[in-house]
Length: 199
Image 1 (cartoon, helix red, strand yellow):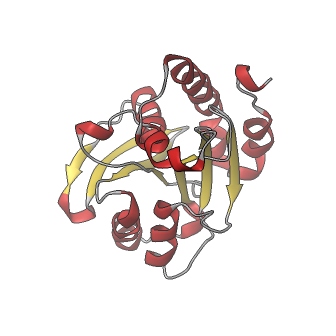
Image 2: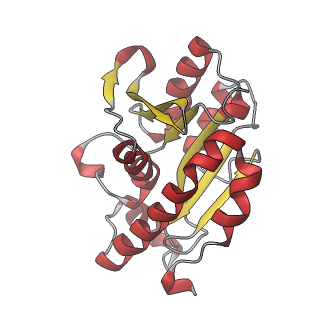
């Protein structure tokens, strides 16, 4: 039986100025997975991103960080998915989410883009297919809407960094179930996770 997830995508922007910004939470989570499973992500111009491979629970999984900038992430995802004939249902996209408190996690199958430019691009480049899995990682919302851009592109506070690490630990505990069996089995546990500040 093939793996339920064979491509994990972490969204973010390339460049040192965006390293560990809240908007790069998706790629930071991807790198946690890469570290655990010994994947070395390298630039691959064919797929417009950083690409690596690893074995998770005996399954070959590709890890991708699109380096096209967030709003064109779909070009990278579609190029790789089309070449390797990976169905949307076998793709997991990890991204930041303003509407969740810092460190909160929500895993789901399918759905809209929720106003996220990276998801919007992926859906468009997959021909309107929304059936990929998404793992939303909370970054919190600033009190004033005028501060959203600065908040999203800014770096995490020390407290937020601890919440992110706790969330990453939870994801790493459940990634094998997610890859092997799919989101249904992993969803209840991941979605029940509560960061310390929100408990």
